[in-house]
Structure formats: C-alpha cells, structure tokens
Image (cartoon, rainbow, N blue to C red; front, side, top):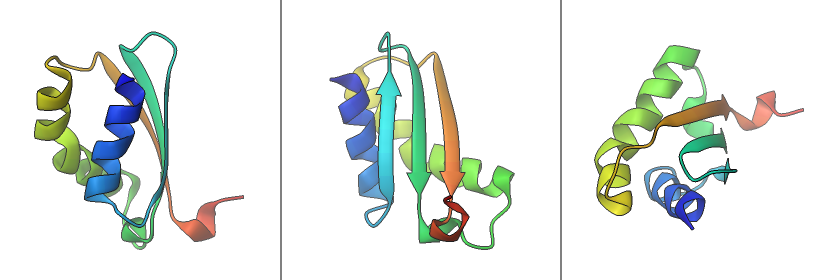
Length: 80
C-alpha cells in the first residue's frame, strides 16, 4: 500500500513519467522513474528534482519518514 502511495505522489509531480515503486518491508523503497523532465539534467539535478517534488507529500501521506528511497532516474532515450 505505501509503495503505491509513493508512486501516486511521484506521478502527481511527473504526470507523464513511467514510474514503478517497490518495497519488501514498507520502510526501504526503490523507485524507477523514466521522464522527459530529466533530459539535459545531471544525476544530482534529477535527484534534487524528485526529492523537491515529493518531500512534503510523502511525509504527510505516510505520516512518517521513509527510511530509504533508492532512485533510478532515466530519460526515455536512456532506457535499454
């Protein structure tokens, strides 16, 4: 349930992205986001974009902090 909530929050921030969020324990999450919004951005810039977009929403939606969120951020052209 929590992974789906995080996925929905990311999709609100990146509505045209391909997003998949997974967790085995609902504390440690991994998210793969493929979006045109990352075009021309460095890895650090991409991470900052996602963190800025979801920071407040994730805390409110879950009522707690996420222990770990691993991000795999790609443009459509970088997907193999």
